[in-house]
Image 1: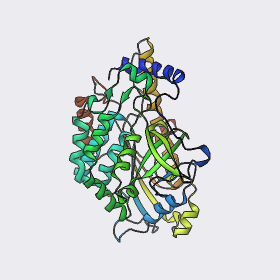
Image 2: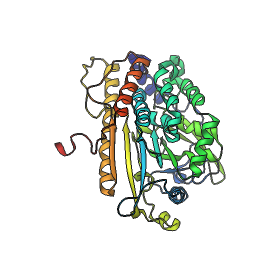
Image 3: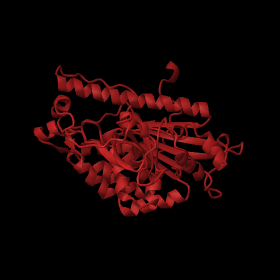
Image 4: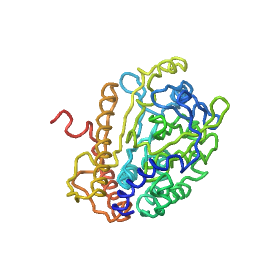
Length: 399
């Protein structure tokens, strides 16, 4: 997709939205007073809306901590159980760096069996493979080094843009998800879920302007491959570029829909801290003492932690594109600092990886196979020789 077309058509979409409001889709949105109370596929513990505690979801997370087998995870000198946890950020094609890092980490030999894996956007696509371990390193390499832009998005006619809900179609991305996320993978996620491990993916619930966290293991145990794929597609559905994903819900015996888009619209990455907000009552009911649990947090930032200079052309499409890229980049940087503050307060371990600022391979399109191969190889090389995880964000405190 050319940058000029991408940015200039945004104006058409906004104009069309104001003139032709309601023409694109006949919706039955969930009313505001029912947000957080609706059921998805009759599962009360399948997801939580951040800021609206879901006791069933929280208890499900807590029960996972009771399923460890002896020797599964280490304890520290104080007898506190220490869980390795992985958070994979958004970043579109830059997800190739994180994919390479994961494979190199496997070959280096110190990659842990993560208790919890979370993913947003491109991180949501990679998360199931990262969750299932090095057996899927070949698949994640193929996914992030062989695709091009046409494998992710398809162009729409100007008329479809004006009367639709996006600039491009996500049919290619949907097919890609269907290719890689198979019934066999779903069944393996279910097995790991029953062993007490957890896989979470984040989406942005656009109607409510809230972040939704989905327990993909619960969906896998139910065998609902369709919903599993829908959530993954929603997490990667960049607003305006891709159409939203409408998730069917039921509340008060009536059917509604929720509009979900890329989780990166709200946050680029998340950890257990978002999962366990206001969870003291659930922990007490299940019999878990949160003070006796520690986390080794590994955060893969599929992007840079410093700005990059680029002369911007003095036209609206170029300015729009550069502004969008800048906002997303700094959101990811802010998330890395926010998570660090939470981890430090909780007494846990912080480990951050990101693309080195001096490595910026050029690309001819949004998803350029050569660019992605270069990023994958760099991530692999950085990890296979022993990645030096950053214990705090760069320049923290100004030093």
